[in-house]
Structure formats: structure tokens, C-alpha cells
Length: 297
Image (cartoon, rainbow, N blue to C red; front, side, top):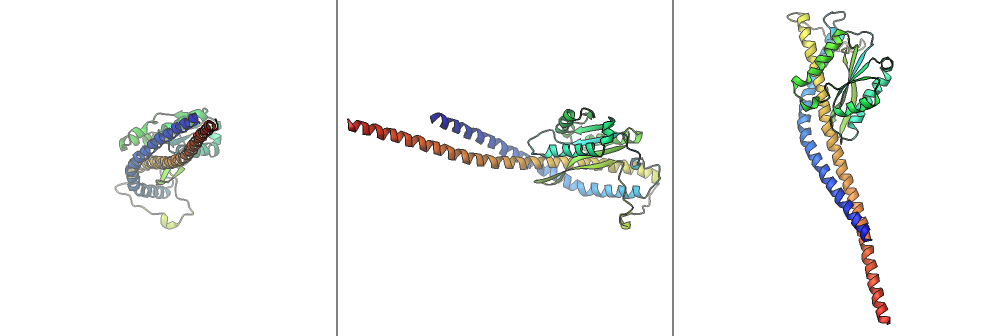
């Protein structure tokens, strides 16, 4: 019985220590989330409006040679960009993004994968580990795996600039980005969006959405600057969305872990008290039995 009590005491201490760690991690993630959430909430309306404007412009420039990033061509070689975090302990956040990217590869680009024409560019160690292990038939690129170590604009835009250059040269016919879209601390969505070529507005869309733009000083010069700039901003939004989603997911996961620790502690304390009562009752019975034996003599 004594050994059992000692074992339960050790488990209680272990759970308390673990709970202290999860509470500390929750507080750290909450502090980081406030900054990351502020950054994406300020950026998203601007990036979404620019992206809508870009789609509208390209929808009204059919056949214009200057819109190389909107050119639709037969898809032979594909690049899938997977943006995950470097660390775990954030629930199913990383696995959901990896699975969303895998679903696109195995479904939409199954023919290209069978020909070995799919490249996977990983940002974040978790996504890299997932695809390096499971997609050995694809080229998994780790050049930007440590991008989250420096989230400055100048560092982030290296990735879209490289992708746009490869697309313009014809090395890729399509580029898609799998990332975590941030809604709030408790809700994140794993999504996969087409980055290149830029999706145009469908003919069936409301005519009010299709605007006739006036370009000054000239259409070609303006588009050569405007289109890459908008695409770079859109990619930065993908990264900042994932960054905020990571901290939201980790804060929620650590909060649930702390709650689970409380439940385990409650059960362990009940078990400990029962065992202690049994031990005390047994000792009392032994004393009473011993005293009765002495009296009978």
C-alpha cells in the first residue's frame, strides 16, 4: 500500500510540473498571438483588396502580352508551397495544412506527380518533415524552411520573387500555396490557394465587379511594377496568416492541456485519498486486533 501511495504521489508531482509548463507556454503564445494577430488584421483587408483588383485588371486584359503572371497554359510542372510552423505542440494545425496540400497533390495534380513533375517548397520544419518522409517521389525543397526566423518583408519577398521568376521562365505552369488562414485564437482553417497564374474573374461574375481601368502613364510600365508588387503582398499575407494561426492553435492546445491536467489531478487525488484511507483503516484494524489479543491473554 505504501508503494502504491508513493507511486500516486509521484504521478501527481509529474502532472503538476507538466501543467506549469503548459500554462507558461499558453502565456507565451498569448503574448506572441497579440502581435501576430495585429499584423494580419491590419494586412488582410489591404492584401485582399489588392488581389481582387489584380484579378479584375487581368480579366480585362485578355491577350495582353505584359500580363505574364496571368498566362494560362497546359499544366506540366507544378510547385506546391506548404507553409507550416517550425515547432509542434499546436494540436492538429500543422498536420491539417500538410493534409490539405497532400489532397491537392494526390487529386488535382495526380497526373503530374506520376510523371515526377511536382515540386514541394516547404516553409517551416513540420511541413518539410511530413513531405520528406511521405513524398519521396517529389522534389522537396528546403531552401526557405527557416523563413519564420526572420519575418521582415525583405526576407519574405525572396520566396514569391523566386516563384514568379520560375513561372515567367516556364519552369512552373502552376503554383499553389497551402497555409493556415487565421480567424481567431480558437479557429484556423487549412487552405490551398492558387498563386500563379493569377485567377481571373469568371465570365459569369457580376458585371459590376469587372471595371475598366485607365492606366497612366502607360499600361505596360505600370503593370510591370503593379502585378509583382501585389503578388508579393499576397504571399506575405499567406505567411502572416500562418504565423498568427500557429500561435492561436498553440495557445488553444496548451489551454486544453492545462484543463486536462486539472482533470487528471482530480482523479489522482481521489485515488490517493482512497488509498490513504484504506491504509489508515488497515492500521487501525491491526492496532485494535493487537489490543484485543493482549486483553484475551
